[in-house]
Length: 167
Image (spheres, rainbow, N blue to C red):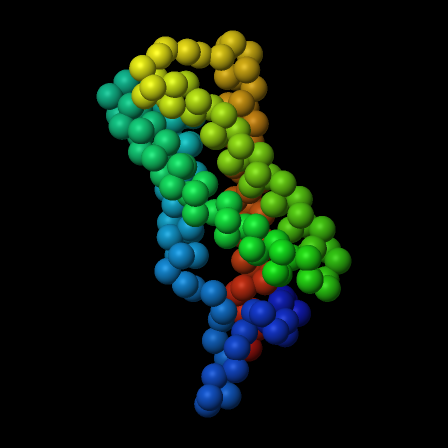
């Protein structure tokens, strides 16, 4: 049972009637979650079926746009989250795993932004691609860090923000 997460001050708030409710759930975190889920699914589609030209192009553009939006929303939010919450965490395993998952998210975001550089250059009116080895390495790191980042997000939410046990 994960009752310890529920006993942390940041995970629940006392309401006037004395009942418990989960913390979080803001429109911003909801948008983060929707973007993360959509990016994960669209990334899988691109990885598994890259040869479907017309559908892949649409999925790729949507993936790029959603990735830029998520990076713009998530990076400042993560910075605040780390400086205000993670560094104050008192549970050792939770803290260490959160730092690992934060590193995975940063790898995911940075490799996504680097992999999108040819698109940015193309919008500037030039055609440029990095060496094939660089593209393949970025793709490999981006793909596998996405699995770790999503697993870490699920574990983080389960340990920190979702109330387990008696309701």
